Image 1 (tube, rainbow, N blue to C red):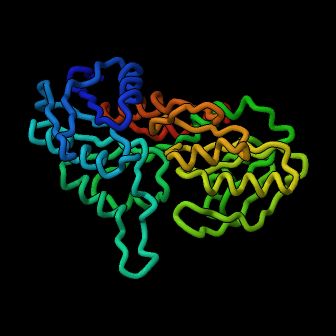
Image 2: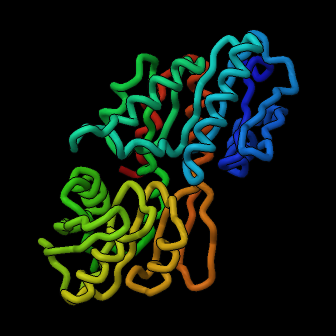
Length: 316
């Protein structure tokens, strides 16, 4: 690796993760001013020479999603106009991934729009973690390195007692992911059927799987309002579950999510730092770091080597 040609910059969405990634790689975080004007406009100034450099810009698109996304576009444009050789948008959490299809009349496919805007702003490559829908990779006309948080989560989960554990998907759509975890942990598998009544409210209707006296682990890719997880946990406990944990790749929690978690249906939430996760009293959250995963991805992209090995899970 040539550290002099590798430059890593961070937006304002998750600077702590960016610093942790730089510490892992062994480079300094790039010097840049990223500020907001009083009217909300973003302003970026890169304060070092990046001509001919391999530039990585780390920015998740969590709340405030539009602000963070616009900030990312502007940082990419600034790097392009400063003659960077290659610009990789490192998006640990790609926030518009849920708007990936036209499932109602007269609605946009915003995931595709964001992909177009990233390319138009000057990104040559994208590095991201656990897209809500994997086919979003096809929305881009540039290379996309799509990593999974499963090696990080499994490294933690492999040490828990699985003798009384049943793994559940909180909805039918997450069965493939849940099945992979159940195989790794060698546990029984179940799923819950849900009905979404609004953007913030979910009703768990029925379940399939063993629950009586069992410890339950729910697996999902993300949680925001915790509606799906808490509805699932409530139904599981009504059906005799002894305890309910949940593991999600992205803990994009808002105030409503924290309120629901504080009620105690979820005994522990395990997530990663793809977004900044606030620790609050009475809310049992364990945050795992994806800095090594992303740092290794950045190193391999910089060296033009394969990232396939990052999908391997130790001990499996």
